[in-house]
Structure formats: C-alpha cells, structure tokens
Image (cartoon, rainbow over all chains, first blue to last red; front, side, top):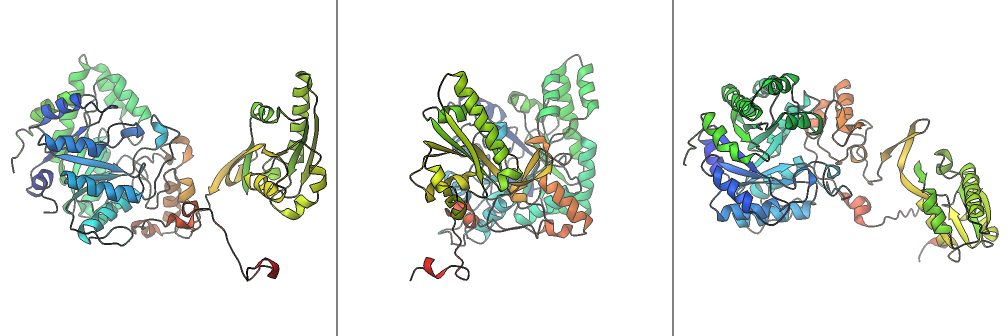
Length: 305
Length: 228
C-alpha cells in the first residue's frame, strides 16, 4: 500500500473501480457540490476534484477536497502544472496530504486561453511527467525536486491521465509507459466515445504488458443532449466523437435516455476489455445521473474494504 | 532576428500629441528586414503624422531618418547632434534599440513606435514565426532542431500533451503541435527512443526567470572597461 486510500484498496483487490468527478463552482458556496457528492456517496470509490478545469477560475481542488474529507468522502485531487511552479506544486502536495488527501492526479491542464482569464501568464515551470516524477520522488526518496530532504515521510497514491484519442496515436502508448516509469499507479483516460480506437490502444498497451503495471480506468461521459455532443465534437480538445454516435442521438426520441444508454453500453464494453481496471465517470453538469449509470452498468454496490 | 510590429497609429498619435518637433528614427537591421521600422516605414509614419496634424490644424515638424543599428552607441553617435533638435524621438527600433538610445542619450525623450514581438524568421513573404525564447540552455540537440520551449504552448519537455490533434496544438488549428513535428522527425531518423527518457525539470535560472541577464567575456573585453 502506498497511501491506503479506498481507491488504492479497490484497485489492488482486483475490483472494477468506479471514480466520479466533481467540478468546483465559481464561488465559495459548495452547497450544490456537496449535494452531488452526497448523492454519489455509495456509488463511487473516490471523487476527482478538477483543478480550475478549462482554465476557468473556481474553488481550488484542494479546498474542495478538504470539505469532502470532512464529509467522510474520498477525493482524488487533480493538480495541473498550468498555474503553479514547482515551489507551489510541491508545497500544495504537502498541504493536501496534511488535510488527509491520499490520491493525487497529475496533469498538464488546458491552456489558459480557453478560460475566463485568457490574459493569464501560463506557468508551465515543469510538465505533467516531471510533476509525477517529483511527487513519486517526494514519496519514495523523501526528496524535493531541488534535492533537499523532506522532514518526514509522505504517503500518496499517484495517478495520471492518458488520451488515446490524441495524436500521434502510436506515441500514446510510449507516453503511458513513460508515465508509469514516472510514478503513475493509476490512469484515467479521456472520455471514450470512439471505442474502436480505444480498443486498438488497449491492444498496444497489452502487447507491452503495461496493463499489469498500472490500473487503467476508462473515461466515460454521459451525453445529455445532441447540442452537447456537437459542442464536444467541435470544441473540446482531445475528444473524438464519431459521426455514428451523433446520428444515433439525432435519431433518438429521448436524447437523455439515449445518452445514458450509450454511457452504460460503453462501460459494459470496457468491462469486457482485458486490462481495463475500472471506469472514471465524468458527468459534467449532469452529476445526478451517476448513481443510475453505476447501477444499470452492474457496478453497484461498491465494495466495502 | 528580432521581429516587431508597428504600434497602432492611434496609439502613436496619442503619445506624440504634446510635441511639435518629432524625429521618426528608423533602424537599419532586424526591423528593416521584417518591414516594421526601416527607412521606408519611418518615412510612411512621418507622412501619416503630418497628415493627421494637418487635418487637426496643428503645427508639426517631422523628419524621418535611419541609422544602421539603434542598439549600438557608435551608430547613435552619428546622429547625436541631429537628435537633440527635436522635442521627441519616435524610435522604430525594437525594445533594445529604444533602451540603448535612452541609456546613451538620457537627455532625449524617446518613445517606442513598435511592439517588439519575438525572435523568429519569415516563413514566407509577409509571415513571421517565433522560433527562440532565449531560455539560455538550448535543447535543440534532443529535439532535432525544433524548439519545444518556444513552439509548444506549454513549453513541455516530455512529449505532446493530450491536446495534440491531427498535428495541431489545442490552442489553434493554425498552430502546429511542436511535439508532433519532433515526433515525426525523430521517427524518420529512427531516434524515437529519445522521447522515452524522462527529461528532468528545466533549470529556468538560465532564462529571464533568473533575473535580467548579462554576459561578460573577459577574453574580448577592452582593458579600459575592466574593473580592477
């Protein structure tokens, strides 16, 4: 055990893991976020807390994680390298762990031009690979990036993201391998709509035996409307939505139900793919459907470990 | 070379409004080549200032002339006496030229006529692209001549992020993904193994983040400039 988090226990015990996601609000009023968290309580093993997602200013992921811990829930704190240099990132890891955070997900972060402060200076002092490696070294070597020693041991379960839908496709498995070497114990992927491409990526992952070195949680996002699907297809970087999926939604009388069905089918397909260790459900602005998805996908009840 | 762009005319007219005798001083090196601040542009700008003042029924005396480089004292000296006749010098040099002029002739009022943009080159007539950030610790040997510090919007050192799609950067479909280019070039040279190594955090102290930089070369310094 690296940190003894619930997520780590679920993964290590071989259960198909389920993580959810909460996007902090543009205010310090967490009432609605807490309601969503409460509704998902028994349906996910841990909650990702996004870090100023799409570069929009929101309550900090560590702040929200602290609130979740008070509620007896387990956060996965997302940390991007966009807004903080190595001093702040290492310091925030210590602060998060002091608050009781056990899972941290390291990522680059969307470029600041996409957000509500497009004139912001992007930090990018280190990249996501270096962030993972730095946190791993803090935990395993007891050392900061600069070489100085931590004054006490640190326990944290580290994850990273992978995007099988980004290019160059053949590089994406190399990158996964690199992230494992840098310290990732679990991986959450970009939202999967193009399942065939995901399967091709998983084949390459298995060829190298990487699925045995890291727990891969496939990303699933239920689509609420045809507009949402089209918006993601055209505007969200790193996501591929096949035309057939758009057509299927177009032809459906009840778009919401069809969106749910697609998500549930995707999870069922993921469960059949060798080497997929779980699912990461990102129901952005549609958090209330997570329990239904988990239940209908046959993933309820969650293991109590 | 240094690539610059003329400031909007309205901004220039506004800065110059209080002054009657104006010199528009061109620079004969980088900004001449990138067609932002050479003799031709100095003359055009001087004409635009005159027309604007005439329209506003205000007197003005504008002259346009150019020196080889505003970033070297010896060239500034060639026009030092002439510059003193004016109320204001609108420099069409890059930011380095403006500052060199001010440092050498602190009695002059010097205003910038250009926005200095970047170090780059013309990819085609009328198109200039950024190629170097001057980070002070070149990595081009690892990346086969494509700079990820400059050309990757996140200055990543360990390969393309998840926003790279069909060879383009997430910030714009008009921007190439630098790491996609690097990947392709390394692939052609059978050197993709370079991408598998984890590159450690960069030491940014060699860049501007270490504070303003100065290079001292004792081997080429003149004896008079050396501190005993």
